Every structure is written in C-alpha cells, then in structure tokens.
Image 1 (tube, rainbow, N blue to C red):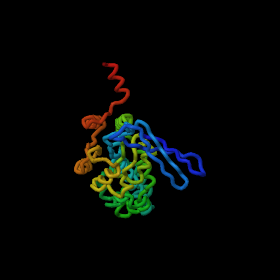
Image 2: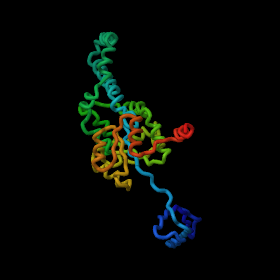
Image 3: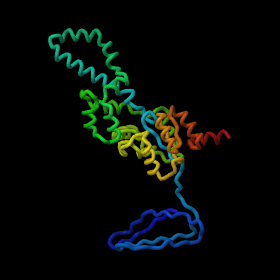
Image 4: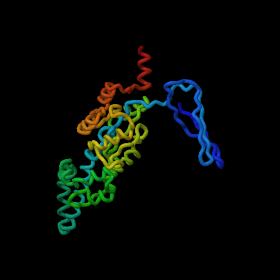
Length: 304
C-alpha cells in the first residue's frame, strides 16, 4: 500500500513523501508502523486493515535495440553516399589546384562525363567505407571512450578530413521509425509494459530523441556510451539484468542482429530477432505479451 508520510520540521512547512508498505502475510489486523525522529524532524504512519499491496511491477520487461530495430540506421544506408560526395569535392579541389591551366578542359570533361563520375563516386560501397574508416574509432565513440572531436580526427585511418557537422546532419535526416514499429511501441505502452532501450550507440542518441521522441514509449536506460560496454559483451547484459533487479527470464530482448540475440539467450533472457513489426507482434504474442489496443478490443466486442 502506498501512503503519504507527513513530516514536520521545526523550521519549515509540512513535507510529504511516498512510503511503500509490503503485504503482511500473517495478519490483516490494524497495524501501527511506528515513528521516528531525527534533527527536529518527526515522522509517523499508521494503517488499518492492510491486506493487499498496490503497484506490482508488470512483467516481462522489454529491452529493445534501437538502430534497424526501431529506427532506420543512416550509417549503413545514407552515410556512404554522403562521404562519397565529400571525397568527390576534395578530389575536385585538388585537381583544380594542381591543374589550373586546364580548368576549362576539366569543366568540359565534367560537363560531358559528370553523370558517370556521380554514379561511381557518389555510391561508396559499405565494404569500401569500412576499409577506409579507422578500425576502432567508432566503437570507442559508442562506448563513450572518446569525444566527438577525437572521432573527427580519427574517423578515417589515413587521416583525411571529415565534415563532422555535415555527417551529423546526414544522420539526422535519415532517422525515422521503421514501418509499424511506433504503433507496436504505443500498444505496449498502453498495456503498461516497462520498455528500455538497450543499444550500441554514442551520445548521438540525443539526436534521435530530439527528432523522434522515443521517450514517449521507452526509457533510454542502457546505451553503450553510458556503460562503456557494447553488445554482445556478456558483462553488458549482466549489468542490465542487475540494474533492473529481476530474473533474466523475466526480460525479453529484441535486436535485429542474431549474435546479440544469442548472447542474451545464453545469459537466460528471452531473445527475439527483429525482422519486421508484424512478425515481432506475433513473436511477442507467443511469449504471452499483451499487444491488444483499445481499438482492437472495441472491434472484438462489436463482433461478438
């Protein structure tokens, strides 16, 4: 039972704060919980006919990866094109500086064959991007081990410059909910489930929040940049379960990457690989999660 305890300090007005009482398993008689005083503050509370406890935590707790599970990931879909355009601009500038006497010829070549250059240079394959970028800088950034300024200096392993503000703007434009996921999150919220983000992402998660307001549905509780760990590190999963204060079997983890799901299952969590929102609805239902909405309930009642 949740009560309000009223405290009367000698020099300030009344203060009230919530006090949670657990169910008395052996007696339902009136109970006086007692009183205490310290530093001129006295508190007391009494109850009558205590027989039930309110506010039981609803299980299971849902843990969601974010990128390509809830939100479109621009890094794999939009960033390669952005970086290709940046490389092309640098390439053109160097050509013009070195071949000033051939500017008119270069302009003619670009006019005639610019579309071909765009086709090949504006579409950097992800494999090429992964080969060009620093092997550990992004991971360190996701863990919160380096700052954005350090990432800017280390992004490419050959030391070439990167337009970090342009890159961030590219990411912002690319953030969007995957089809059907926002409606699913809303259904889970309406049914009272506790939902947390459990994601490998840097401090830029704040840009996602600013644009999409994920906090309307979940808590940004477990981001790699806050814990200095990344999935599928078992210590990260263990820390999450410890933080939640529940048995691992009372958690359902959803991620688009199977290796992350397998790591969760190995530690006793229930794991689901995300493919699309419709399949996830079915998988959650099979695990006993109620994803019905007021609208669907009304339609069921009308048809019966």
